[in-house]
Length: 149
Image (tube, rainbow, N blue to C red; front, side, top):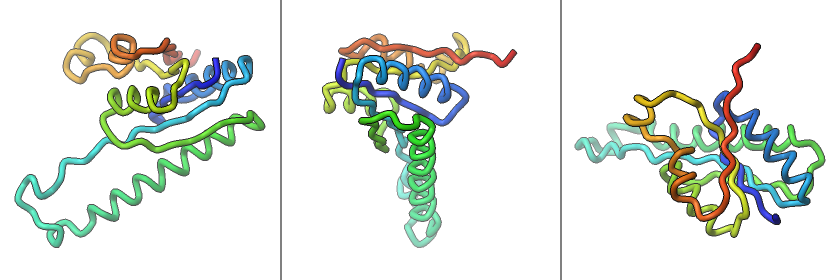
């Protein structure tokens, strides 16, 4: 195992994903890619607005990227002196962008969290974890969120 991709969404699932992926990368001497997916926003032009009517949108997009980059760097620091850790912001839908990134990097394993929202939420919203298990071409490790005791 040479390359591990850990997809993080900065939710309560992230600490478990980070810890698990870090342990695996250390045990195998693998390169670890920490990625965060930035989903595209609905363009305001789709609703008939002009850029002049929504001057805050470019600023909002910049702030989202800046904050996500900072959070990824903070997570990188939590891994300490683990060598071979890369961080990357990826644009797109979470499932498809993760699959594409895994293919581009030639990763051997994907690690991501499961929120366990339940059947109804999965039916209505879909589940990135479930989609990865079904569509990924490499092994996918799902780390459950543990309730605090």
